[in-house]
Image (cartoon, rainbow, N blue to C red; front, side, top):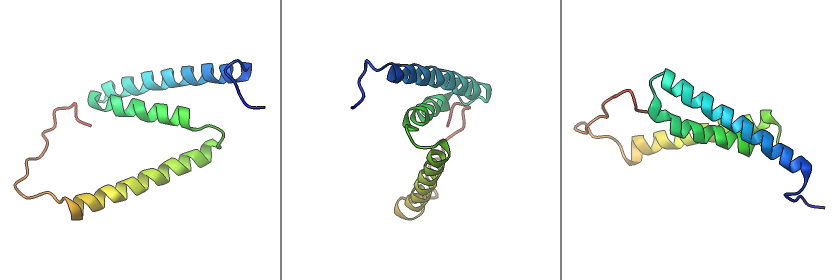
Length: 102
């Protein structure tokens, strides 16, 4: 038998995820403001939501390992693209740090 919205266990899980997601987002926004990185609060909140919603049935250890591997692959691809496909020219204007940058 499949799941349905009327299942009490599903509603309890939904309620718990909402509380954890809300507390996680509040914590992330507070920490970003504390470290003067208010611009990073949006992407940080998205990451918290992805982690809270995405765990599902997988063990937290395996989920964290998968996320780290995905992030590492993304960093490698970004470095390759920035180095070989779209390298910065010497005359390119650099971003000025205003405290609200990511």
